[in-house]
Amino acid sequence: MPYSHAPQPTAPDSSAGPADIRLVVTDMDGTLLDDDKRIPDGLWDTLALLRERGVLFSPASGRQYATLAEQFAEVADGMVFIAENGTYVVRDGQELSSDPLEPAVVTRLVETVRRLAAGGADLGAVVCGKRSAYVERTDAAFLAEVERYYVRCQVVEDATAVDDDVIKVALFDFGPVEETTAPALAGFADTHQVVVSGEHWVDVMNRTANKGAALRRLQRELDITPAQTMVFGDYLNDLEMLDAADWSFAMAGAHPEVVRRARHLAPSNNDNGVLRTIARVLDL
Image 1 (tube, rainbow, N blue to C red):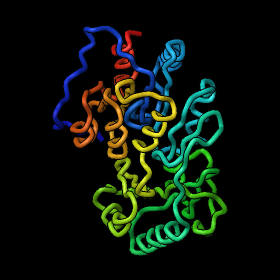
Image 2: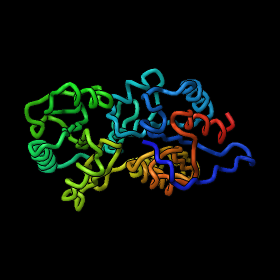
Image 3: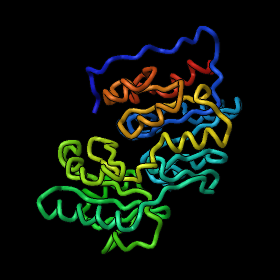
């Protein structure tokens, strides 16, 4: 949902020529993808130009690794995927980092969702493992929402008993999640991250896990500085990674807090804002 009254950061000054960018990191939904979840025209050509320049491109999303790997299958060689809001980072099929939840926490979260649903809330939990996502709710409307972001998803009788490393629990609420489900998870906020990642989604992860922490680890591994990093985001789960880059862009229509934290503003996701900004700043 676009926000129309947020303050507007200034655009970067490109008069000095192309910036020395070595790493481009972008959120997916509401940022790179348009509102119909479509890959923008020109993405593959842009990625080829970035590769020629030696610039690494990295999707950073609340989506699962399998979903991202499928979307970028034709260009995935050497690409780093920051999946599940930074809790699982993979390059060329090899795990670079992960931050699993304790099983007892997963159980508490699933039981909380069961109680909320029994009380009339229209929601469901997605237990996000490294190999697959797991759900207990089986109606078509809920599964359709889940399958947008989780191409590997299993319906199970008991989501607290899956044989997988659980890195995140995502909750989908058919109502506005900031008003409904998120407040009900306040008890977890003292020890874990409770992050609103979309109008209907809230994610619970370890306190040490976020896109920014994953990005900073990647920068250290690759010897890339924040000044050489460009980041794009639109929602609250993007805040920490915006802080990790000098070239940080909020999308037009982003959440007001994202606009406040970013240094610059990009055109909206429906106006191909990520690719247009990359082309302008890097003079592609």
